[in-house]
Image (cartoon, rainbow, N blue to C red; front, side, top):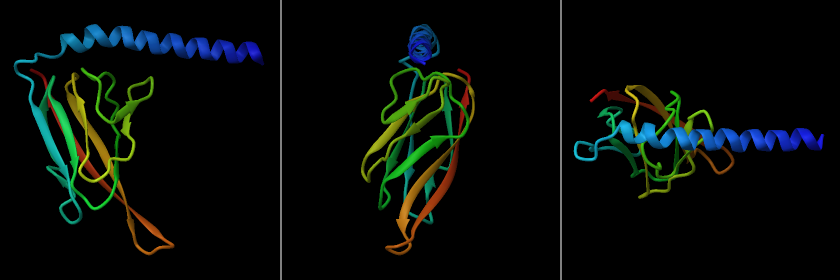
Length: 149
């Protein structure tokens, strides 16, 4: 049993190092600092929700979500991103490139830089108080279309 645990930990560390080594050159190749831009998305209370719900970006652009709603939210990409060009803010990923955030409090933000063209769907989850005994989760969906430069 102990040897399986050591093997699993060694394999996990090896995979993490491989992702880090591959991310460096791939991330630099996909971005150009002189043409990259910021794509803002505002998270508001209902009925507006996500503004804009469908955002347009290009390779190397940073997409930033600002929570202007009444409570904390989380963002989870439904579509796998893979590699991001710089360290995402308030996002974390697993070894396969599935990104999500921890709670983003009102007034705070999260951002990620996209390097692979494609259509990325995500969901925003917000807990609201239906009653003290029964919280209600609101799930909104958005989409980012990342074009090739």
